[in-house]
Length: 92
Image (cartoon, helix red, strand yellow):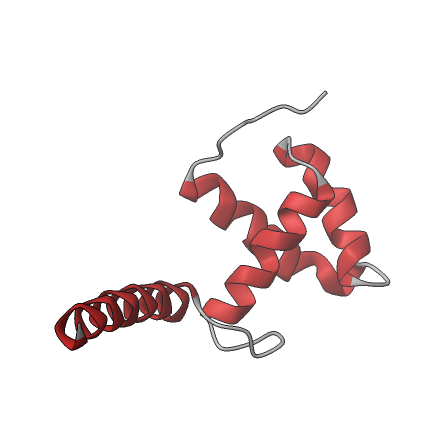
C-alpha cells in the first residue's frame, strides 16, 4: 500500500541538508540516505530523488537538466507544437 504524503519545501531542504552534511560519516551517500529517510518519514528512494534534483539544480550531479531548464524546455516544446499546427493550417 502506498502513502501519498506531501512534504513541505522546508522539510525537503532540511532532509537534503542532513544528507549532504552527514554523508562523510557513512560509507556512501546511499547509506546516509537510508539512515536519514526514516527520521524524516519518507522512503530512501524519495530522499534520493530530492538529493539528485538538488545536485542538478545547484550545478552538481550528473549534468541533468535543472528544474528551471526542464520547465523552459516544456514551454519551448509546447510553443513549437503550436507553431507547427499554425504553419500546417496556413499551408492548407
